[in-house]
Length: 117
Image (cartoon, rainbow, N blue to C red; front, side, top):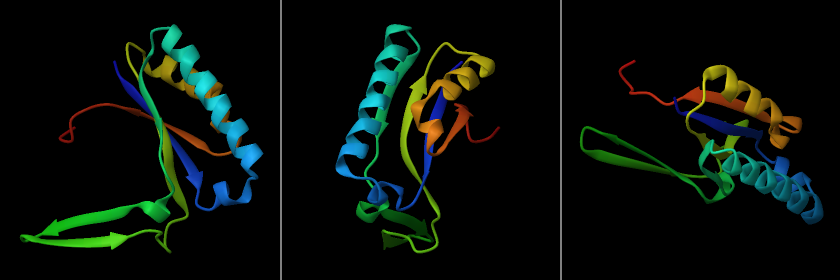
């Protein structure tokens, strides 16, 4: 099965870090991803930019609505992801527990599946 680890971090957490702390956190995450790749479990991993650069799009009745970030109501944001393959739910949870980001945010484990389930 395939699972996605979503890195859910508090909005503003990145701004509280020094550049050195941010680079160290990123390096730890890259090392973690490389280890998963070597184990044959990683399909892809990416870090996402802050919500200050994002836009939300909704299309209702043929009319699109755009909302630029940052979003005042948001308390958390998806900071990145790891897409895993050939793992069980238990393996995905164990891999999430190894994730360095679990020390400073939440790692959400989600099985890939169709939206009608």
